[in-house]
Structures are given as structure tokens and as C-alpha cells.
Length: 466
Image 1: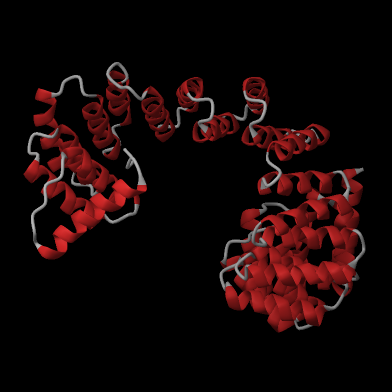
Image 2: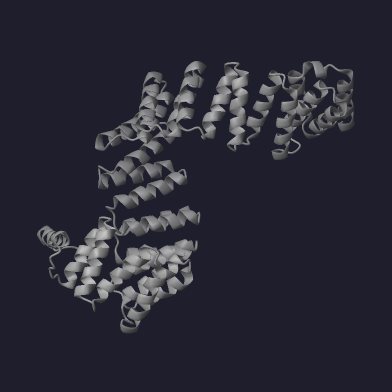
């Protein structure tokens, strides 16, 4: 419920707050109390809302709406047992009050009894004057139990009652996406647009669905219509820019990202995309300028730091790349992509001990990619730490059993350590899994490869496989 005017609002609120300060007792009708309570709830002043409910019930002890507001606040504070007792008493008197059913459903939902909550909400529909709100609550309960088909059905009922209910429209599209029914989402949005052709939100959502389907010309047209409907719609300009990038129209993409900067405060996303576009256009100075802007605007955005680091790696300016990846790590020491880049840059600078530390941190943070294990093992081999190399490779083998790259390396290290049996075992495994990669083995371990015993193993395997 809203105040009828700012004047009424200020008058009622000032009288109420004056009463609290002076301890004078002023009388308010129940409707005024409801408005005051709603105001405090909307502004997050829970303590004042509770005071207003208490005084309101003292002045109007039989007010059902005030009792329901008291119950709603109890549910919000998770005082479910107290709220349930009050509701049970109220239900005896108010069997046809939709709000009683809604609050009982709210309690059941808080207790994860969503099916029972849905039953009560459906019962409340026959008494409610706001069926759209109740249908939305039912839709949310179905979302809680991952029944996206039913949830979608009830959110669609909300749209039937109020075509401008964009919250429900977003939920409908969310359900379609979760059900991986992008074609269904496109069909529904086109039907919606037939009824509401100037809805920038619907056009925007339609463009996003076309983008998922890689139908870029259709996506571009949809975002254009969203902009026609609202030429200040920042989201549409951003999405249009992404489509133009996919189409290779980098200058036009930059123009759309630039529009978002003119319409509102700059975003790190827009700066990042502009940097990427300038890099694709070969305008390196502008590219790096916008990467700098990206990390300045949002120092926590990892894509900004990786973009600027990768930029300098491509230029083979490894010292600058190292400078920026170190800055990134200082901001977020748990970011695995930063550590992997740090390892690769240190390796390029032949700082092998530092690379070893970085690879170890990369794995500790959960990067178990084959390339990480192999690169780390190669660094340890260069450092002459053969025992540690075998430890790393055996760990890698647990994630990638019988992988030839790992097996050849293990064979080479074991032969180097004069552990002939283990070397022979892993060499045979490697040859069995990928014989052609024995040339890689020759490059990695030329001295081992020249041994007569090793050549015999390779020769015998070649004969037996032909």
C-alpha cells in the first residue's frame, strides 16, 4: 500500500516519529499504521517497523492486516513457530483471507516443504484479488524444487494477467534456458512481441537467444529493435557490440560500446571489449590504453588483468607481462589463471625456479590440465630435480592414465635415474599408446634415446606392430 501523496506521507511519518521522540500518544487509524509499516519495511528500517506494528496493535487489536504484518515480520526473522501459532489462531476467523494462506505457505517454504506450500498457494488463488502475485509465488516455489516446466507455466500466467510483468518474463526465459529449449524461448518471445511490439526487454532477450544459437544477423536485428524502443538501453548496446565482434565489424562494435560510456558511468566490460576490438584492428596503442582503463575501473576483474598480460606476451615483452601478472596476483592470490600465466612467463624468461613455484601453486589451486602437469615436469627436468619430476608425472598419470606424453617422460626420467625396469615399463606403455610420439621422446631425452637397450625396445615394438 502506498501513501496517497507525499504530503500525507510526511504528515503521518512526522507525527509517528514525533510521538516516539516525545512519548506523547497520538492516534492513527489502521490504514495509516499499515502505510507507516510498509514505508519502514521498504526502507529497511526493521526496528521502526516493529515499533509501528506494536503500537498499531495496541490501538487496533482486532486489525487483521496489522496482525498479518506482524506475522510477515516474524517469518522474515525466522521466528516460524511463533508466526505459525498466530496464523493458526487467525485462520479460525479468516478462512477466506488469501494472505493467511500465503503466509502459511511462506512458513512451509522456509521449512523446505515446497510441495505443501504450493498446495496452499493454489488454495489462496480462489480468494486473492492479486492473482498475478500469487501465480508468481507458485512459480518461485516450483523453481525451488527445480520443476522448471511447472514454474514456466505459472510465470506465463503472470504475463497473461500483466503483459508488462518483466520479472516474470525474465523467469520464463530462465526456465527455457535451463531446460535447454532455446527454440522454445525464441518462439515464446516472438509471440510476446506480437502482443507487445515496443518492449525493449523482450527484444533484448530475443537477441540474446539468437546469439546463443549463433544466429548473428537475427540477433543484430533484435538488438536494433530494442534500441529503437529505448535508445538509452545500455544492455542492448553491449549485446549488439558482442554480435558485431562475432561478425568481424570491430569499428561498429567499438561505436556501440562507446555509446554505453556516454549514456552512463563507464564499465570495465565496455573498456575490455573496446580493447579487444582495437587489438583485432591492429591498433595496439589504443588496445593497451583500454586494457589499462579496464583494470583501473575494476581492479578485481580477472579478465582485465589476463587481457593486458596476454597482450604483452603476444608482443614477447615478457618483463612487462610479468609486471602485470604480479600486480594481479597481489590483488588475488588465489586466482589460478594468474598463477598459470606467471609460470609460463617465468619459463619464457628462463627463470625456472620461479616457474616451478608458480606451477606448483597452479596445481594446488585445482588446475589439473595435462599441459600444466607436462610443463611443470619439464621445468623440474631442466632444474635436474629428477625425483620431483617423477613425483609430478606419477600424479599426472592418475588424471590421465596411459597418456603417451606422460609415459615417455617417465620412461626418460627413470632411464636417466638408471631404473631400467621402470623405464622399460613406461617406454613400452608409451609406444603402445602412441608410437609416433617416440620422436618427441628422442628430442626430450637424446642421450637416453641413443642407448642400445632403448633402441632395441623401440625396434622390437615397431616389428611386432607391423
